[in-house]
Image 1 (cartoon, rainbow, N blue to C red):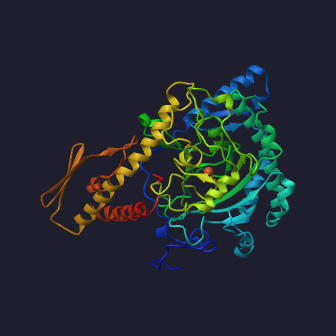
Image 2 (cartoon, rainbow, N blue to C red):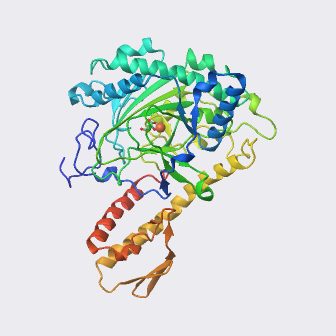
Length: 493
Ligand SMILES: O=C(O)CCC(=O)C(=O)O
Ligand SMILES: [Fe+2]
């Protein structure tokens, strides 16, 4: 496919990222994020999980840290987890080599069937997705290993052995962490252990995000939360961003998660949110791209068995904290994927937007897991206002995002019109800007990010000091992204 040719659908096996196209086709272009992003990784909790095996006091201390991390972010990093560095390196290495295999070899696993225990893909509904992401993935079930491993790729040599070892170790770690999570909720360490261990699901998602020629305009994965109880993630490079909803007075911000050798990341998934009746929040995260290097990540999703429904434990329900979530299983989730058109991220059409990677975008838990009652009662909130605030900020964030779109479209139209009309006079007045166009005046405040860069609907017009070419380029870029926001993703931003 040549540049300029209609690229509204790229079939898997033929996607831009698989072919390393030197440009980003329109169907990959996403609207700019409304929230600031910073790389202040100090706020990311890091937990030394070896202390879970220590004495009672030590264990209690770790459980307290873990509980705070689950309430605030739904995310933490773990160190001293006991998995040997060689095992981590080998798993990343065989994953990288798998994606380097000739297309013919990878196509053996190509499938759009979300129930398939092993599948290679690039999209959700091949040929139907309105928006595409710069990602290639291989997913395979991994627990119990002997049941699935013979279905995994035989190539590259060593894939089964090395990935299998990693899966087993991560599974064991997941049981340890889930035990600490149920203990932190007052349910006891073994509350879920047999349901997670003997019959539980482990889905290993092997992600590859090739270098992208214009990394700012596309995404590896859109904002979503994982359906799982927990996801344990290993990456070779930074690129993951998590959403901290409490930052900036509740309007939130994205935080870049750095890569530190040997550190694993833990995402709280939707099923732990259900388990905790809303006390713990599943983390909303997305994947950004870079221009130079291929990023590999291994996301191990741990949940109950295929048909085993997660529900709110009666221990966590009382008059003040009624049940806030519907019960559901992994299978219910897959059925939901099949029955819904989830590729467009249009939340106005459905609450239940879900991405193809068994993940639930933004406020989907309301539809998929919550929603016993549209007038939801106040959240279970034994620690005061923090959780309530977070809940509100999520909703506020989504509402604000939708309202800003018309302004962005309007401002962009004005800027384009300005370039085709020399009579327009744009002036910057201190902290506000006015564009006067034949009697029409539009005014607004310049919206500054905490790092001082301008964002928001007046961003384009405030760049009057820049060279004209750069401005035109930027406007062009912005215009493409605005068109993308018309097309898709109302639910994502
Ligand atoms: O690549 C990453 O860092 C995240 C992957 C992810 O979110 C997923 O597979 O659900
Ligand atoms: Fe995810």
